[in-house]
Length: 113
Image (cartoon, rainbow, N blue to C red; front, side, top):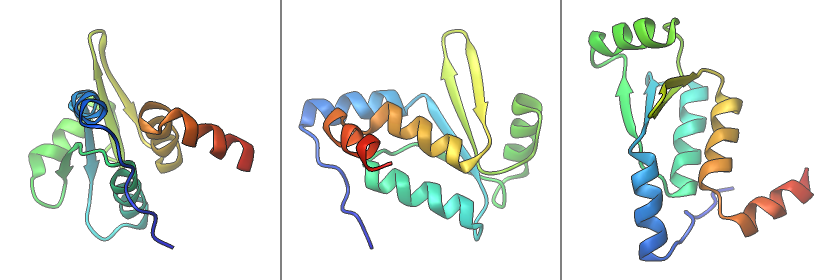
């Protein structure tokens, strides 16, 4: 079942877009875990920079030197204190939900679990 993207006010979406600017998703085509994250990003209505390792070998070098592993999917989270690297798709989705899921919807999800 397809879930429609989250609708936000213009100001809320601008805030989300600013926050998403600090995220980079490293992935490869045709991998189920990557597709799962891409679908989730569309549902959350969040646009992040995507670096596809199949398209550029430099991205794989970035991933290996920064995160320590050439495993995808990987979400790089840039902060003032450095970068954090999340490798597991479920961890990435949990992070995205905490960061971008509107509070009313996240409370409903908590009750559903």
